[in-house]
Image (tube, rainbow, N blue to C red; front, side, top):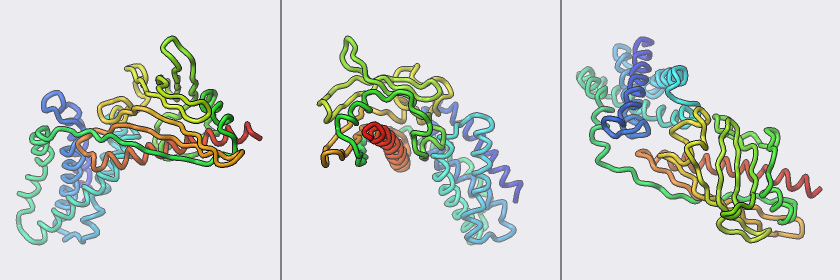
Length: 313
């Protein structure tokens, strides 16, 4: 079995390298149905075909391919063709697709004698999907998310913390999934007046930096800024190419902070964000983007809650 597990992992790595160059020739990206569904599906079929003499159970059909997927993901990290953020975010889809491939190959082996012919066809599946996929252009999904929290401080106190968030320490940010998988943490966010108006300057770890122009402002009540990312906003290695903000697949448009008084010293602090997701696998990418966005926004809210309540006390 291990030979076929290793073969499946090697097949996955070869496909990853191939799809890394595919855009130059076929216009298909790594974040595509051909790679993200076709490749793990084929890996699952490879592993179960290797178990054909043992008459694999349903459980084996589902879970045996996972070892091959795991080896392929680890291999991608080791040879630096993929970063930690992409690996973690893509792995659930890879595991599920490999199980489906394993089940289909398992049933073919049980009910027919066409296992070898089926495997040969499945091995070519990512390439065949790649050739037809460009006919269906990517459709952007424009999304809005809202997250809020109650803060034991006045709107004025919270307002000051939002506009001047300097020297953000790691211990001020609660543990969250987004930073655990490798997304840089914020270290500063400061609003300054410039000749073009009020501008928000943000810095994250690993040299990430960008600005945003304030487009609406009601003192102590609401502020909106629209982001501006440049080629230098994300230095090489700071964030995986496939999840880079302002990139092909994901873009963050604007953020609004709303401060709504609940009582004399309690305020509802809300973040509203608008962003774009555009991939060939939006059925998966959109829920992932929403999860990451909500996780990050919740972290920012808890930072301002901590600082505002400490300042108020």
